Length: 422
Image (cartoon, rainbow, N blue to C red):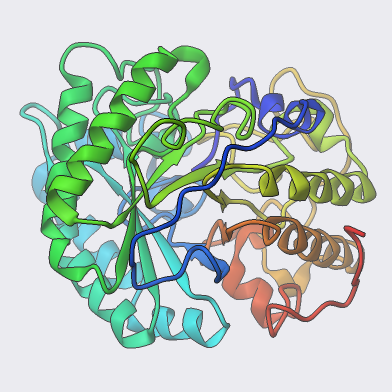
């Protein structure tokens, strides 16, 4: 879900805001789905750290290697433990991290979607990989829980063979080797298996995201578009009119992607996903709370100018990168100067680990302002999906805890600070 320390992340928000808005093409009308993306707002949450491990979401799973830093992602976790031990530990994790009660709580908070990250290794494992399987048994249960709770599901292929971004959340931290060898065709196979497996659940699974966060700056962009076209047809062939979601590959979500899938094309039920964080560069963590709100508000009109359904599929209440291991296992934060090469902006007290209740009054106020501004901006088009529902110890990111402590609006349309976006 997140970027590691070496990403050119400024382009994900500040540079985006400076770009010129392009005139949108005429939006295509949708074919019938069990959710009306034309007229109803997506209000959702990611179920991060469940089927794809991220050290900062569940640091206890990686604590044995906190000093050696030899295990930094799911690949090295399963490689180090071996198949049997990894299977045992991960099966326990899959069966306990998210349960039916979470789906009920999500629905009771007024949300209507969950985005569920899954790795290719769960649906199309490759010979020689250390990963273990069994995720689909639990995911099958989750589809039933969503149906019972009245929630829709966006299935998100979060990790591709070779790694599409080199982030730990792709399954394997390090080089970006997707598009090498057979990795693209293997990814299409994963999409085919995922789409066909849930072809009978289109009352719940309303969208499939072809690939999370391909790092456009390290990949061939035309190749990404070719993959998206292949993935689109694969979903159509296997899951009918299920919406096809594509990530913006960290390119300008309006000027770069307007026209793709829509201009001179029969493709319908297509959705663009952009991820908006304001904490992964020195300039961003140095922004004032007011600056963060202004940057969020500026995204609203730009989102409204896209020619496809467009969601902000990841965002947060955080205005710092303080959460333990957010930048990678064993790495510090830009905000307090503990990340190599950074300088101090402020203190991470209460934000490195902790609970929402223990945040300072200023932090609580800043988060509530920021969350409300983002809701107002992102609902100027299709909607939003917050990252993430639960964490072990990262209070700025823990939606369940933010809700419990009044920092996330209830009902979702209520505002303590109305009119921030004009």
